[in-house]
Length: 327
Ligand SMILES: [Fe+2]
Image (cartoon, rainbow, N blue to C red; front, side, top):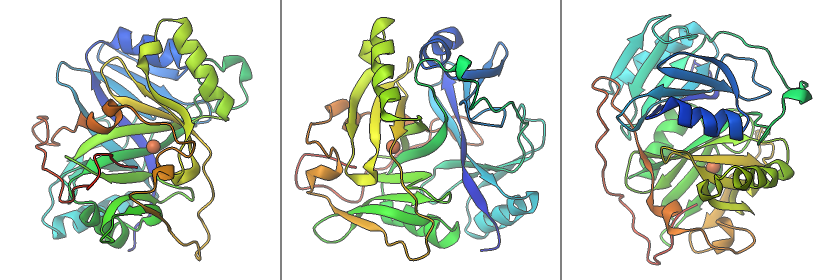
């Protein structure tokens, strides 16, 4: 392919109460608030040199507006538009300035009906990595990945690897060697985009990189101190799959955010994807403790790029023999 997708770069979420969201993300988790108005809050992590990686948009309609990918050049956007159109997939251009701090953007629905966004240009912002005086809460560093439930993981995997140029770091296969889940990357780490078998397309979680495991543990202490202990859904713990040290939280609107540390390098061309068996419980939690039912059963809807309505979901093509679930 003659275009270059760099990395997952932003998530846009509809939230019902901006002040309540600010209390959680900024005052408690320590996100940097680059800018806000009566309808939006634009947030970034401490090492991010761009305007934002998370947009909270005030709306009564719950849903995820876009999973945004940064590309290397403006020309890549035109090439991506042609690719999606050649597959009969919907595309929509948002000219520069339509979205605050963002250049021209291409919105599409992919083969799973997942709304994706591609852009090249975003306004800059001060990189605060060494402003240790500003480190608060989780000491959030940067956006890392998104994880989506889709009804046909093989179909999503084929499109992302064959058409968009993603590589696979790890995957889960069932007894018949059918693909149950896949971790795909453009940047040289475990993933930008994960797919898991489930009702979808729906967002399971978006994730931010933290500087070390202690930042995750400290987050739990901070959350408990200010009355947000109920937002801790799963962890801290370590996944077998991806080796991630993880903590899953539910924000005030129910969106799941993962705080994450423990990735590894996947840049070598001879790196071989790591296979996990669906019945190997260590892939979920290396230490063996169980995840709550909510983690398996609750996901967030996506919104249509044209209508803004919630995208319809389909049942998964694969079912698991054991009641236990994914990752
Ligand atoms: Fe994750």
